[in-house]
Length: 329
Ligand SMILES: N#Cc1c(N)n[nH]c1N1CCCC1
Image: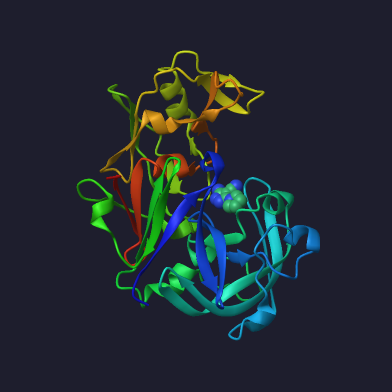
């Protein structure tokens, strides 16, 4: 109901952005992910080893938790990580926005990368509910459930490079971006916040048409994974840039001047991604070689992750299935 705001805190190297939620009165720090649609949480039903260092939801300590008999979830992500377990419902409060009867996916097994990331205790999926993995009855996301009672059917991501930002539900805070939002239609058939990308330009260079690729806005992905057309054109302007097999992608000298990248969103807005935000992090202890925040993917849609969000304030409108962007304030 109403609206809610939570602080989004970057993990080291801005790998992901975490925020606290309350499940049945238990406060738990979670990874908010606009690229998936399951709300799953570390639990006391995991092995002691998996639980170590985490905040583990204890269904027996919640007076409002109800088991969803016969339901289960199993999710695997593009990076090979995954989680599985049972399902119930409980009251979820995110910064004041509250949903009763929210499907809570209680992990009984999680992959090693989740175990070792002790800052995160689960995910809040914010893509469309058609991607939810609960069976036999698919469940709705927190945002889907909250929409009807939110002041506005929206949530926003205000993510910053190496600094805290915020996620907000039910309200668009115009003090957080410059000018006005530009809105693009979302193609909901895939279940992602997906839009068209028809052109791009590098720095002050000419605009180049892309072959009609699409892209998704995915807060759960660290980097900006773009088409090879964009990535090749971009790094042709960066002296010393090269594919670096040992680093697992394109690197460049940390002293390189990185141009801005302008990418079309929905055909009528060129979103600027600052060159500084494309310098992701050094790959060596001397800070000589840096890893590109822009990397190539053959995946269509492209996966525009946190690197893009560091330059653009993003609003997700579930009322009319559109996505709004503007440069951060
Ligand atoms: N891979 C991947 C991925 C993605 N594209 N969106 N969210 C993801 N993850 C959330 C937790 C682990 C990976």
